[in-house]
Image (cartoon, rainbow, N blue to C red; front, side, top):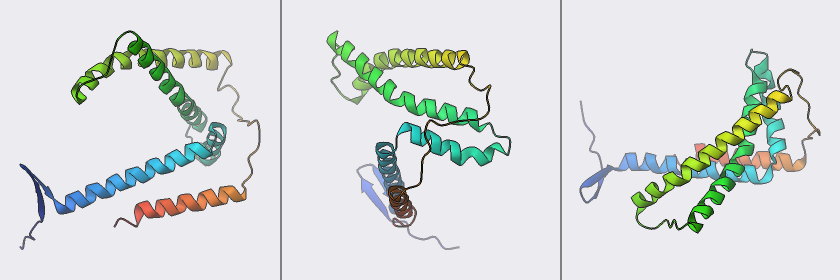
Length: 178
């Protein structure tokens, strides 16, 4: 058997394999493009349109016995909670700064100072989730199986353009870096 020479890059005491570095950069590139796509997606599509799209795309899975109504509702609620949780976190952070907390120092110090922000943020999120669960229970969510939408969406030229741009970005993610 022959062993190929592995090209390495030295950083002081650490050495990196050039092929491993290339693969790592490839995955970083893919993750960055994913976040660009996600940012564009959330910028141009409303939560209602997103919920309806997921619901309609998942409908065939219901014929396989998968409870798509519950899964889609959970996904929709989770997406709607994200901005509220960030706003609550910002409010708690400002309240703690008003009481004298000042996030200075190195990264370890900032991590330690993040815990007092995390606990009230999570407590608030759990309270909000509990309230939402109670509201869904009171409104008998899940009793009626048919899902209705306030308005019907139609496929337009701008949708085709967005789909083409998304397909091009996915192609860039999968093909270009190789």
